Length: 103
Image (cartoon, rainbow, N blue to C red; front, side):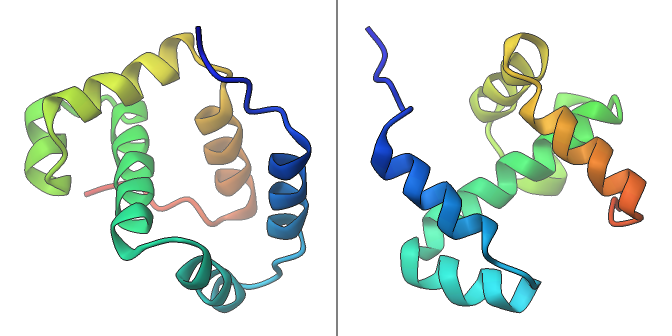
């Protein structure tokens, strides 16, 4: 049975994140809230999602990001069967001009 993440504590965390206004503020908050490895893992997954959305191969993604095939597969499952969170964010970033396709 999976854990329910919809809790008051998670709501409060997300409300706190929504108050951040700049990338510098994000660095300030997330450097306090997360370990370096947690931040790097999150950013790696996001980079993997971006590259999968651009139809890059697992081999290309692994070479560029250092992600394992297990991580790439997990992100791919989220893109296909998940809640469309990556798609929502990437679409909004593209609309705002903040989306930078991977090379």
